[in-house]
Amino acid sequence: MVKRFAMVKRFVGALAVLAFVSGLGVRAAEAYTCEVVIKTAEERIKEAEGKFKPDTDVRIKAKLAEAKGLLEAAKINHRQASERHTGPVGKYTHGDAVRQARWAESLAREAIFLATGEPR
Image (cartoon, rainbow, N blue to C red; front, side, top):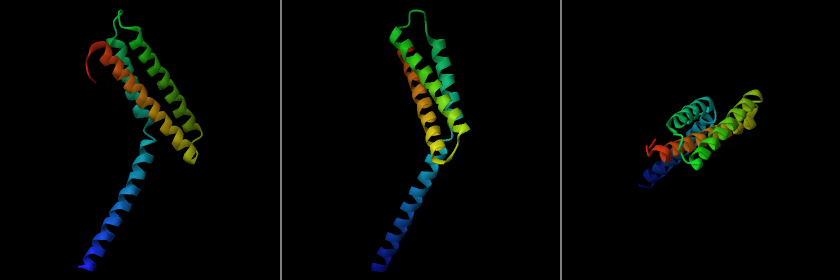
């Protein structure tokens, strides 16, 4: 009974280590998905621009303007990370670009919802 408990404990420990190591690999891979996330944000911003009418509230248009600014910042961060892609600095810069692009996409989605009532 004691041996079985020790074996189960060792197995659970090995699973925990494996999950931790594989989780780090996924996070590192996510940092390099800039181009896909940036393209998705661009498409969502274009969709939001198409949904706006002349009488759309200024506050909704301001959200879209903020999304465009964040998208430009994401493109700049991606370009800088690609030029000086050295170790952790490049990885963090790519991560910043991904976060900014996702934020821009979420602002564009919010603008679409506020302008039309359509969830995205």
